[in-house]
Image 1 (cartoon, rainbow, N blue to C red):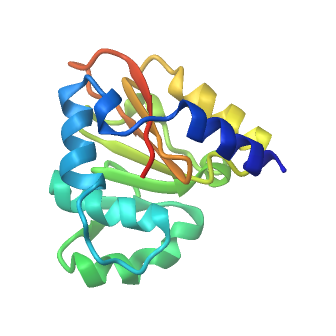
Image 2 (spheres, helix red, strand yellow):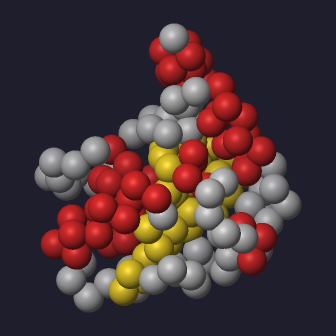
Length: 164
């Protein structure tokens, strides 16, 4: 029931690219997330594949259940390096985030943290809200199915809710 109510709230408060005034986020949405690409994958993996292409990431860290996605990622990016730390992009479920030793405050400026299942329960959503409020997190994008955190020091702190 929480997920359904959360979805209704999300639809009523979210926007598309027309409500975004940040050039970084606007380009990410229009040139990456809204780009038509035939991928028969779950939403979060689609966002991941598109983001790796858009940002030209070289390394990825897979945490928890996402370790099983290595083969699918290698199909699209055979040269990408799978690493345990200092990756360009880190992917995990929000429930796996507490079980890892990932230090969010020490992620690099150009790093992206892609988090799945942010609206599946009240606890997950509270954890997501806490993450978006961290000082080191500059840009957070709530896409309902997943969320992306960016740590760009040159960016003003902003939060977006984007329909994908």
